[in-house]
Length: 163
Image (cartoon, rainbow, N blue to C red; front, side):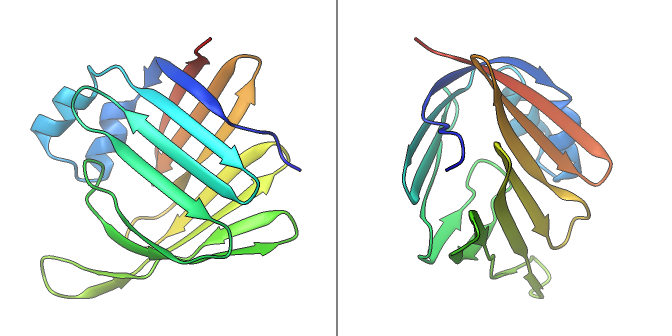
């Protein structure tokens, strides 16, 4: 069984977040607000169920999933994508398959997200309109690390476990 990420985590370091948001085409006003926010992550992990709440004074975001069950996700406040995902279990990994979304040009993009355990690191790889996109979560001591990457931009966030 992989490491348990459950807990409340408070952001204490946020390197290169604005450049990461730029590469995702997040508007200027949202970027300027977001880089100054204090974030808290509340993660609940129970067997095959995982809920990640990202809380701030500007916007909150929740992602809940059960391994093996399909679910819809709207990344409101992030990069505003509508996603259809399916998660399956295979050898201590879980997979999120992202469906299609319409763009402003009315074309359809197929996006695919793979989330799996690599040792004690939770790794997400997203394939779609942006190259080399995904994230990694890992714990060192009382710190939760989140590395967000897209194309050649990397953002590193560090959260401290709240007692």
